Length: 329
Image (cartoon, rainbow, N blue to C red; front, side, top):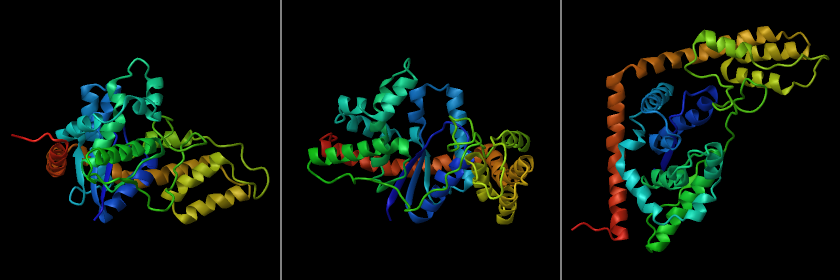
């Protein structure tokens, strides 16, 4: 069975875009592959979070993924910093990563531009740590978003360079994960683009009914159709796209027909959409709260993941040490 490795950023709550994108893919992967899913708390240190926020974010994102269906019996779910061998492999790979190529990465240049007073070494060596995350479990496939494609290519470069330098095909050259079908792109509430944390246009799985309804009622619309069967404008199509994933087909068709006949009332559309989103997210939200408060269960999940990840990682690092020549007396 092929191995898949993917990181989870502890940077805030999951929204509907995450759920119908990464989460749905993860749920499918865990039934078809040997999966390692880790919460990337080392990576988050490049932005200097406070200790309390970091721990709470790790706890929250762990609870949310478990509530969505990630299964610790099917996959290895662990916290990155629980596996010190990752840091050691990152250091060893970094000995053959060169300053020029790291400075040229888009992720480094973007982050350095956004946080000019905090251009730390972790930002520069981010691709090396990401490579260690992937190679430590000898991954075959890695699901990556557009913003991480270059870093995956760096991982492939580091793996190939190691194999060439030490004249053996030790590391697999991981491939970008692709099911061969387009993901559902969930739009935000601002009339354009996709749902995202930084855009501030998200509907989160943890949102309570009243705040959720307020968000939906503020969603951008237009002045309404002026002629029967007018083309659907982007803001309204965005609302219909949200309806496609949370409402019944007849509900969606009802509002599309009202739009086509110029009888649509956007207030009614938004109220129905808010009701349907709440109906969809309520069971997940309740499960998130339940898991987040279950200290014993969280400890069990983390311990199980740590032990499985450490076993795989320790073997890889020991083999790498032997190949490099760092042999024990």
